[in-house]
Image (cartoon, rainbow, N blue to C red; front, side, top):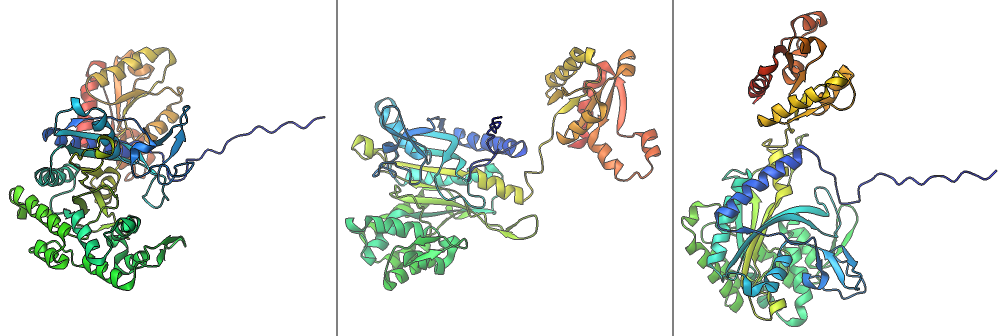
Length: 491
């Protein structure tokens, strides 16, 4: 007798670096994005949506130089053998869109965009391969006035997201200042382009690894806690010392521009960068009273930045549920990138933008216990009689028409299972109409939250059954108002 072939059953698992999300987190994100989008629109930005996939050669940074362009992006080959990649950010697709529709667009062109992006990079704690970005960009306006507006907008957006003024700071620097540093240490040549990129990415980790860790990344390389080794930039000791000194001198209070000027000396590009920062300061009303500071340790790792760069950092300490310190880091960034559209058009088109790290902001607010406490579930209408389903559905409709979340239990008529379901759904109220209530044209309202609280204090089950203080009966015509009053007590 032949052996019965075993049925293949795939293992239910989420791909590494990705995650499922449910309920409260999604609702909190939706509310945050609505507040941020409202600020963008108040500043005159219009929404834009671009596809998840772009042709790989349009992404610029990831031009394919091997058979499969998979460094940093997720790629696949179309049926016409052209490589496409999931978008790495929302900026490169914007540059493609502007170039493709250049003549029809008003200049400056102001847009905001919300959507997921994908990065084929090593995942880690709180670092996923898919996450949401929320960007605003102005294309066609030169420095420094558009940059100044973007700094002011950035601060308003972080505040609208739920971070109180005083709990965050917008740090501002200029990529030209970094270029001035490269001039000073002899890394300004065309042959040093790859080294400069490695150095900038290393410098961008200064707040995370400190002087010692960045020094290793600038030199021979660094091994992380997992044992993985990151190749270094290979700079000599003198160049490493100059870069570290540059990063350590970047505190952004008071005479920070004067300190930067003294550090860079007479370098041409460094002087241009300092002049642009001075222009930003002069263009923002009450600059010194705003949560904006200059800090030359802000680098931004992406190579397409050409001028001012911005980063939003939290200014308060956070702890996890076990009291351990948690470092959230940057919750957003951006800057000027005058060369992206030029790749398509052949002419330089000035552009500047910001990107808000929604996931990190949500994590910070959850640690502050300002969100993430749990999403209130819908009112549950129990279905105790199969032949009365239309009546139960009408009750749910009446609740929805009054602006409440409501659903009818559809999993069977067992009373206990229905209440367990309501508990798992975090339902605040259950609406009950069995045969006894129906014959009297009544409805029983059960305050599930109050009931749970009172049950902790009542040891005598007989007392609980007799008094039932969290449960009462009203006429069918009055049940919607009764539910609304019950919910109002819980707010």
